[in-house]
Length: 281
Image (cartoon, rainbow, N blue to C red; front, side, top):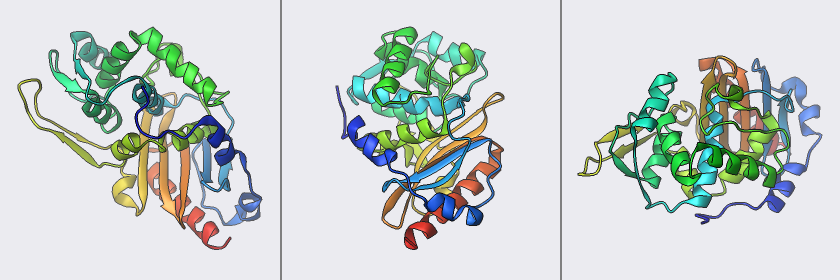
């Protein structure tokens, strides 16, 4: 079922399909970007920065944006999911980031979305995919079907968490990641989740207490930030999908193949650069 107000693919085409000469005109003034790929666009369709934006690369845990998108289409936020030993084992055996879930805990989809997006829990991804595939393979099929519907022609998913196996976690491009983020941010639940710096789950008879902190340091580092997601694998490097409000527009960007701390400082500079261009337009 649909939860919240997603932007349709037809609207998406309008939002991201309009280009502007502004990026070329102001290229000399743009901040230095050392990431291997980057792309920044605003809600009026103005491209503020691009660098190897159509290159297919692994995107690590940015994959979880699509996982959340599919879950929000398939689930009810109040649905309860029981964590299995396999969910926990999947994260620990693969050396992945976790939401510190334990076998037998029962949590709502709403809470698991926080566990998925804030600490980037592969255990939460496993539980959600297992439930709403049902099963991992069927869930990945739904992810790829959603990518096709959204015209993400250079995106392929092989798992719901972005881990290197199987198939190196699939691939995407800077342009496709920004397109997906624009759509996902149209859903109020998604926007609320990725905009939180911390989420606490109080202990009940069904589950332990959890405190999940957002790995996206940009939320505390800059003003007007909306989210969205961090990621890292050795193949993908450090990645950051980010969004903010500047000059009355929503600015969405991504950095792929960057360094850890630098991705946040660069994203802040790109948001401010876009804001300057919007103010001067």
